[in-house]
Image (cartoon, rainbow over all chains, first blue to last red; front, side, top):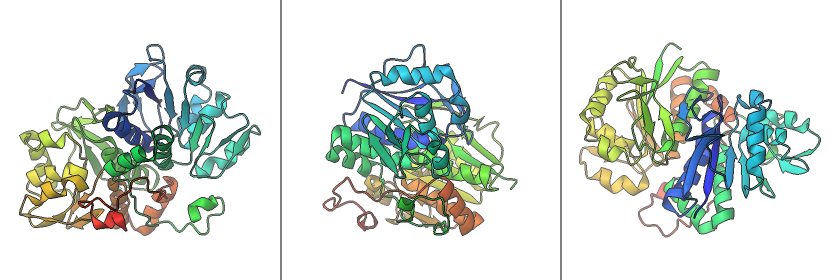
Length: 209
Length: 209
């Protein structure tokens, strides 16, 4: 399909927030007739350094980026500074005018909030940041792995973005296509629990099921 | 801990093969007292382009890389050419002499095979490549999400590397540390099935459980 799916890059983003969804969307794009243009875009178009040190080169800057049809925004410690970066907020707002999906992973939802896109909108974030998101009275915070409200999708922490990406593919291209991506990615993850999560009060109930 | 965990980069590696484990190992390294030196290394030390187009800048080349204590090798279409690249095979062999863990994800196991590290060793790979791995009579192919045999760890396709990474952390640092990483990464993935996998004969049984 003739469309552009953009992934937003900024310093100190969390690696798996970006690449879990990137892999699923990328498989859809390259193998199963998804959008023909899969790109990364950052403010300056150069290298960014992620939270755990991975260095990624952007395909485009805000200035030379093509117009996006879909936008995914990762989270990470970098969001704490980027919420005050007018250029990134403005880029998100401009793209939101014509994107049919705006998705965030983890604390990426705080960038959506700063862009005014979460007003009267259901949204979630990393479980440790739920209370912080609830400080914005206009946001309808839900404690789910991911949630869709209109064209806004938000997911919980880090690895939850991968689950959201498959749900986005199902929503846009159908169950069979999402199944093909899941199968190719061998995304049938283990349910092994290492953490004893029974006594962590602030952990959402859905994680304890 | 004073140690170096290296992730091997090469063109056309599969993004999530690399970054699923990178995130888990990275959380261990940066937040929970894992190895203090987490690096990427490629033959030339420059930019590599992954299978779905993500561009990653290497921290080191084979020439200036520090000696590794742990090595992870992703898979992807690039492995089909890299198995014939003497420099990459030699780098793996040299590091294997002193690494206490050598791990591969997906078709990364074919690089281990080419380096002679899978002789009389249990190993696995992406489900679509299991038959191809069985063509090497010296490899004891097992159909599991991941398998450890001595200091060699191999995992099945793409997303299975994330599960393996947590198991490696448990093995090296204990259950409690693996639990902290899992919790921080919110790695409690959905078990939702999009694919109808009941009729795919060549799919390993463990995926159908």
